[in-house]
Length: 264
Image (tube, rainbow, N blue to C red):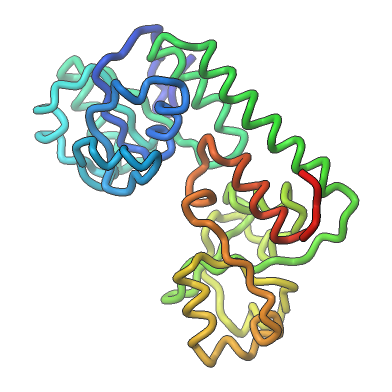
């Protein structure tokens, strides 16, 4: 197999891992390799004790001096153009890298398989992938045939950002029994206008705790019927914020809020 920078992924048992991608950090803990993680990003938050691991920065364009000084035998990067120079330099120094771009639900099983290869536990990785897939299938089956409310997902306010069809969060909405108001936009995080949101008139609005406070205190949002009627779903951002091993839990949480009384 090859990673998303085209590098061949060879079997091994990495012992000192720096994970510069919060999603892969969660996956490493889920497959039992969390005790080998010696570095993580500023944004890692799960499991709680991950904060005890040294912070190596934001993950994109990493400080290589700090990374190299930690003496890792594997560095996991998000496969963006910003990180390619770092991957090239690390490999030139003889440090193995794994670059993955896990942006969709379909990427999860492949990413877990790659992590299983480099940590020497493909069986555990496959079990985790199958478990997440089974939960998603259960939610998909439970919401099949139900009415599907249109949902506007409030991500950010200045500028106003939502999710498009290119986001795994749009996939989550569909599995949970809703339709993304902006599923006609292919990009993951499009900028939109409040006027257009009002014109499209979603049935519900989904936001995190901070976003919900903004919706409740900013009078401009009263132009949206869903806000006026209090049809706001407060999403658990800790669950929905990463395309990782808690995607099944995220789908269950959303389905229960979108369809009260659903059996899951």
